[in-house]
Image (cartoon, rainbow, N blue to C red; front, side):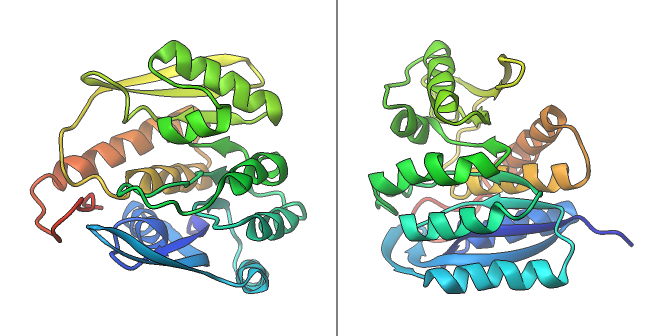
Length: 261
């Protein structure tokens, strides 16, 4: 049986809601096979992030290379990268590959803990984006990358143009933090200079931890199944919305709980 094999390169969440743990849950639930390379270990639960330990860059590189030597990887998902050195080592590795890759830029936790610094944000665009096929920032991350405030769909479009002008890439700007009752996810296809909107009514829940990680992992899974990008995104939005709905009544921890993969 041919499986869809996905490599996730990201940080570990000891609380199990986001990061590598959410990636593996998402990929496995959808029917794929998840492999991983851990970039850092966070001390984390539903209440927040309390510390972070960076994995030595060569170990990150060796994890990736070890997986690739043995397993036929169909797609790659990249999440939390804690510093410039790790960005560069991952970019160096990806430059030798030709594997469809989604980059989910993670800058700050839901609880407000800074997981990396501005130089790392700039390094993502400079070194890593050229080897990726899709960038999936949320509103806050897009504001950081584009250096503008986003308050409308028009602002989202401007941000996508600014980000892609630095290094051309398809962008899915996630609209979960948009003002109003609607969640407006915006896909920018840079080659066609085209925008596609995915509009859905927001799901009100206190259990939203891991939505971004799960979305990008789901997209990586569907792309591994050879599904076109727009359809992969539609299916991934449907999956995350179902996980949000099924997780509304979860009682895990005392803070911002996880979605139910």
